[in-house]
Length: 426
Image (cartoon, rainbow, N blue to C red):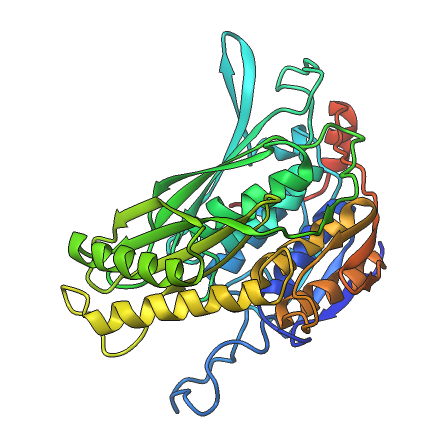
């Protein structure tokens, strides 16, 4: 049995990004990993930690644990340390076929023909859905490309997948559902060359105000077995031609104030840019106020900035003007900084694309923050890729490994692989 590759969880950003990417690469390449000091740079700081609280900082929180458990079940991984607040995890995934993953997936038939394979990630808390899905997506595309249904019939293509992930859709310091829908997935589908990943909001989940666990439905069309992601080039930003505004506000009055202030301030600097409002919803709680601005360019690139308001004083029922002023000013200022650096992707998108650069066939380039140092999250993502895949990044480019999509199709072989491997409950 191969020794796992060790990753120190305090490296660089030292948070959940390292864990999620390590799981992604591990499941696709069947590489065993050992992560110590998980999220070692996260959790209560010594200055603010209560004297009676002897719990160590960091470790696996509910959302991280949900991703680990689901991927462990889907890949029949042998694990140690798969428990809440664990600061060390050993994860040994196995080549997985349909037989070994029956406890994870359910086949859905129409007229005796399979139309999709579905699964669910359950959460009792409102941890970020987007971050759970970030860990799952690479394996869904590359590792779950079965062409046979439960009866062994070859469909001639990979069976479509549907996963419902429970948790929070709008969570502080995490990618929001709106960012996922308006920025991340359009960019991912663009480099995949097809609409391979779709999302649908089932119910909003919040930790701001009254806690509510929501859910998002993801539909994924995996690569066909043997297929690779071709190298891609995200460059030549072009000019901003359109801005998409997403607003979640407690009252119609507050939403109208946000719309008006965004329109006035952005139009002052960009009078020729068309503005639309794809999302303008009530947040159903006076403590919830959110704004996302997405700049779309003439070459189809999207850069964004957002904020789930967490300022003080706390929002009153009518969302005070000072809170709205601060929200709009902060988000527009953040977007203007993203536009000023001249790159084709914003700070958050840059680190999300690193996994695809590392797995693609050939040299892929992402023109990010021109003339500026990449974020700590992006540095961490590159470090994990270099550590587990032995790829190298030069500026915004990477010569990927050209990983082929693969899955065990032979049931007898799959059953043999499953022998002796304990099942994992999700």
